Length: 246
Image (tube, rainbow, N blue to C red):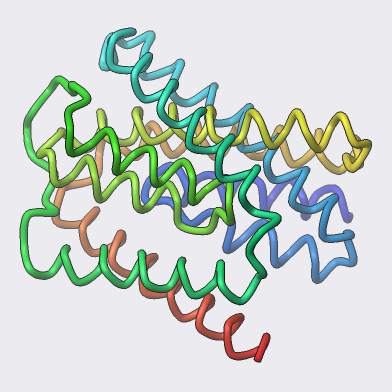
């Protein structure tokens, strides 16, 4: 029964995570409530996210909705940012990291109401002097802390007026790169509970593939509403965590 629940939360978390980010709100708290040690829960989440993100962006790439040139730049920047964030994480306490997350997500939410954060019809992405540092920062934040990183990436692509399906694909490329380094670290240090992780991974792949199918069918206005709702829930959850740490 326990493994069935891990399968279900893997599906649900990555379905939401693929569409608008924030899937960790479902997977991590549930695993920890079930008594999974925090490092094992985070490790399982990173490994399953890495595999599911690869499966989803590969599906989009195979459909020729992403080019290697687009993926290469996002992979590189996200990997560098995630690695640097992971290295820097030991210098900051949990309360500071939570506050940074609240500020970043709050800023993204405000900008979405001011205007500009609307998905468009641009069908090609090229890294530039604005998106490069932002995506590097998102990668750094993911390595540093994590919750909401793919949501922040989606806001970035929306400001570039990319089509939603391309934004989803590129955000999954970034998630793969950002999680890869962390996953390798958790595996190397023996923090992975493999039966749990494999079940979660299977659920994550299923959820990501369902998310890719739904991403081709949802409308831009529906995505914008869902993105804002998930952002608000993320902020509320992080605010609760912040005050709980005081």
